[in-house]
Length: 172
Image (cartoon, rainbow, N blue to C red; front, top):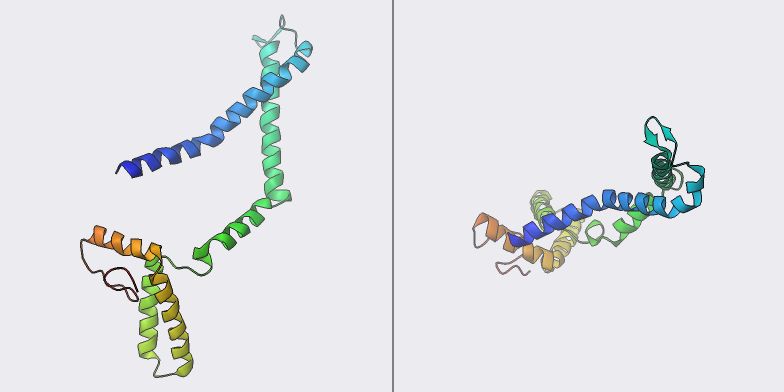
């Protein structure tokens, strides 16, 4: 329970980081820029009852926000850099290439078993199901599947959840 609460707080910090970061950027760049442009804004004059100093600071802040949004738009629309980034993430993720997570493996194992039983001894289908069996066996020896069995046991309250390609101890 403590671990989940800590992770939730960590996630909240990450989510608010974007807005806080934007506020820091705007404040920092506005105050760094102000000494160079302050001479253009007469502090003794008002516009709509607001000192020209504040109008100058607000205009710099709005300019910074627009620059950040423009860079974000260019990153997304013109350069499409996020697409390449997502491709690299997918290529590095073993669960999109050769590893299976526990629930998907359980469904694949059941489907493979049904296919074997319905194959009528078709050699091509049996060759395919043997490959899937070897793949599932290998995945069954990985830590994620062992944790899946432990999690199922914890959630369901059963000592021996039925998972093909995994024995009672979580090992193939």
